Length: 279
Image 1 (tube, rainbow, N blue to C red):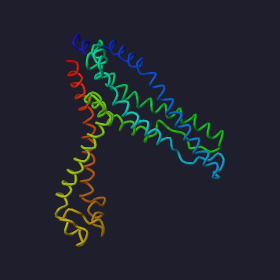
Image 2 (image 1 turned 60 degrees about the vertical axis):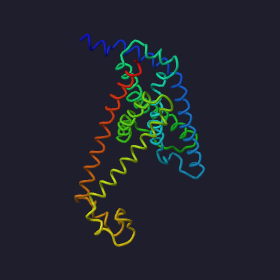
Image 3 (image 1 turned 45 degrees about the vertical axis):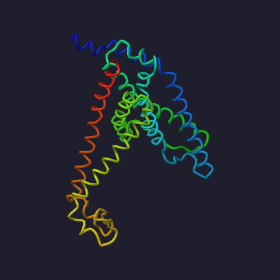
Image 4 (image 1 turned 90 degrees about the horizontal axis):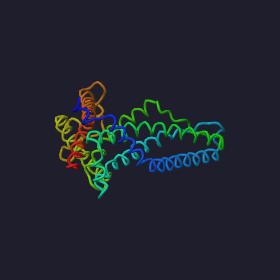
C-alpha cells in the first residue's frame, strides 16, 4: 500500500490539479472569450445574410455549431495538449516544475486528464452554452437561427472519443519535443500517414494483382499498377457481400484497433520521457 501511495497519492494529485488551474485559468478565460466572440459574430453575420436574403422569420437555416465544435475540439485541443509540458523545457521553469512534490505518474495523470477528458467535456459544455446564447440572440435580432448544439448527440460524443485518441499523440509530442511541439507532431503524423498509405497501396496491389488484367481494358494502366476505375471493375471487386468488401471491412476494423491501441502506448512513452527529463 505504501508503494502505491508513494507513486499515486490523492492529496498530491489534488494539489497538482489546483496548481494547473491556478497557472492556466487566465489563459483559458481569454481563449474562451475569443472563441465565444468568434462564434457569436460569425453566427450573427450568417443570420443577417439569411434574413436579408428573404429567409422566413423563425426559420432554422442549417446548424453550423457542430463545425465550431469540431474546430474547437480537434484544432484547439491539439494545440492546448501540445503545450502541456512546455514548462519542462523552459530554462529555470523546468527545474521548478520537475521539483514539484509528485511522482512522474501523478504529473502525467494530471496533464492527461485535463487535456483529454477535461478538455472534451469542457468543449461540449462550452459549445452548448455559447451556441444557445448565440441562437437566442440571432432569433431575437434577425428572426433567423441555425438550431441548437446537442452535446449528447451521437456525432458529438463520437467526435469526443476520437479526440481522446488523437490527443494522445500530441501529449507525447509535448514532452518529446523541446520546441514547436505542435508543428513537429503534425509533421510526424503526416509522415506516418504517407508511409501507411504506401504500405496499404502495396498490400492492395498484391491482393488484387491477379485481377489487374481482368479489370483493365487496355487503357489507363501504367506498369500494371493503376487499376481501371471504369467498367465496373472496382465496383465488382468491392461490392457488398464480395470478398473484397469483407476484406476492406476487416482492414478498417484492424486499422481502427491499431490506432486506438497507439493511444495508451503514447501515454506510456510520455511517462518514460517525463522520467527521463527528471533525471
